[in-house]
Amino acid sequence: MSKSNHIPITATELANLWATYQNKTMFLRFLEYFSNHTEFGQPAFQLHYERSVEEVEKIKTIFQEAEVVIPIGFTEQDVNKGTPKLYDHLFDIMFIRLLSQIGIAIYGLFTSMSYRKDIRDFFKQLTTQELELYDQMTEILLETGVITRPPVMTMPKEISFVHDTNYMKGFHLFKENRSLNVIELSLIQHAIDTNLVGMQLMIGFAQVTHNEEVRKHFVKGMELSKKIETELGDILRQSYIEPPATHAGKATDSKIAPFSDKMMMYCTSLLSTFGLGSNALGGAFSLRSDLPTKMVKLTLDIYSFAKDGGKLMIENGWMEEPPQIEDRNQLTKE
Image (cartoon, rainbow, N blue to C red; front, side, top):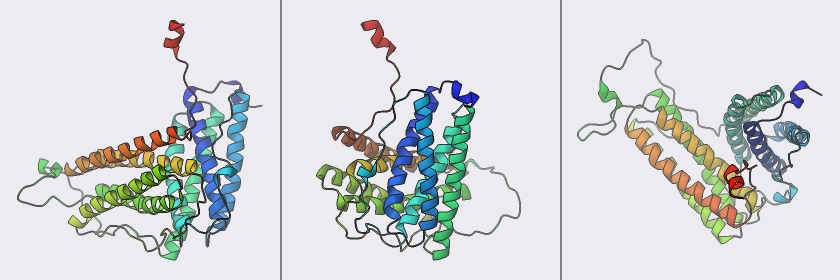
């Protein structure tokens, strides 16, 4: 037994391992479904399925040694592998690529929040594997020609500094805003990319759920993704840049649910959380003042959507509660 195993896990390590268990068990269920329909992803899906099984077992071992109850997460009851395709050509690759982007961000953060060596090593391993998965999915999309590359620009030939505070202004009555800089462009491009996938995901989810309130929530998510894609796309067009688009990855007309409502709602919640972080990042790194304002408004929309989803999950008994810190105030009342 490693020396690390004798060191108690901290509250942050417990939280991050618990969240990883939820994410990885969900990821396994998606891979089980997509593996039955994929055209190009089978070798990569099988590799990362096997790795994810091992990672889930690793978390179980850590929890058992720490005498922590094993979460439920998502099981085989949350996926129906024999259903027709809910999404067409290459959506599986686009969606798994999106999940890998989320994984890169989350597990990198979790590494920096861990103290025990074996847990730090575990999250570093997860980050590396998510990077590998992202590379594999991106390469498939590039080879098949369904992914839109960001625009190519004239490369700068000299260094310059900003000397006019008007550089930061975004609202002009009598003249146009300045063109986007490459940092602003990259963040807008990324937000549109993710929402194109999210919109199709919501369309498919809305088609197959039999719960009317859940269906309305997914429709709202579809409309929100469309709003984000349209409004940010308009900003690109103002700089004469066409926003990203793809002909692939559309929802089919299937009405048979391949996933449980619980899992579809959790996935939607995860994407909403990722969207909140991405918009916050976009606002923080944008120097043109109209862009943070736009990002804040969209962030409030995403937050409202995520909050409604949380209420819906609680009402239906689908939200597994994370480990709770002891209420010391309650002890004084007893």
